[in-house]
Image (cartoon, protein in one colour):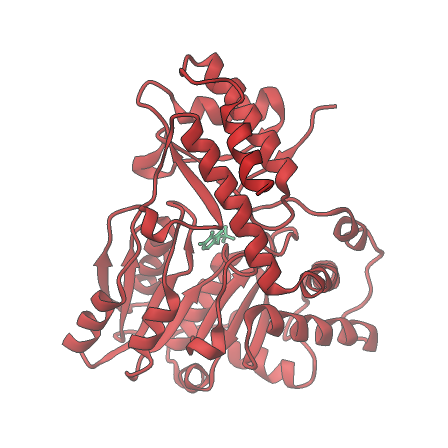
Length: 379
Ligand SMILES: *Cc1c(COP(=O)(O)O)cnc(C)c1O
């Protein structure tokens, strides 16, 4: 049987003990047993989010958590800053506009990260801006935003800082409380190595005030309902019971490893992947200054179709990587190193990439990518 190695930025691979937890018979959610699970999950999430704030568990993919953030924080006509330097930054703009929020869009070239000074300039120019929406790891381009620097700027104002940490949480550092991030959104199927189905939203005191007063229409994702239910260790609607139970398996694993160790671990996987790409004569798509440890976006020579690379890797060899989106379609491939991925997964992926590049006529020394990654992993 063909392997099915996922080196994709969501969904990510699910380790065996989490698969086993997902296979358990279902329990009812209005029971002390489920309450135990919910309590443990919230505590575990607080560790990963590095916060003492409330965290709400929603039943949706990551975008549902993003939509919840917008509809609960802002009212129609409110002003917000969004940053467009990739697909997920654009999503913030689209959601805001769906709710009648007036967006001050900061355009950033794809592959670069927004500078805190740009956000400061925009905030200084308009004192009525109520929220700033940024992306921790822009999965479409492979950059990481300096959230700490942005938070320093936003904390001096009346605006709340909202971070899409869907792909970055548990992979790169995000000190929610220490840096002063008001709302963090994440999801189950990236760094936390679970199936899609859960979104998580944390909210500071400053955010809670807005949540209480937003005039936007909201029902399923009304965080006032989540907050009320959470006080009784409950959820307003039927939660994704099985995934919440499996989440605890994932959170125990994260706790056991320790966040700092995980960040160092993924940094090494990322460095090995980057060195492998360079050794194959390929360049990295993002700017070196903001390159992400969450995933590696690799530019391909014009003669090589990234769509083909991706398809052959997946359909012939059972190894999935992601392609480029929008204007990057066919031009880059993206290799994720988040969640349940180790050195041997990366080496397998690189060796497969070599095989496919060779087949497509790219000139390089066979084995150079694997050797470069090995050198990093064994240093
Ligand atoms: C995956 C992802 C999302 C959410 O996408 P869903 O398909 O709704 O889960 C949001 N932001 C980023 C940066 C992501 O990588």
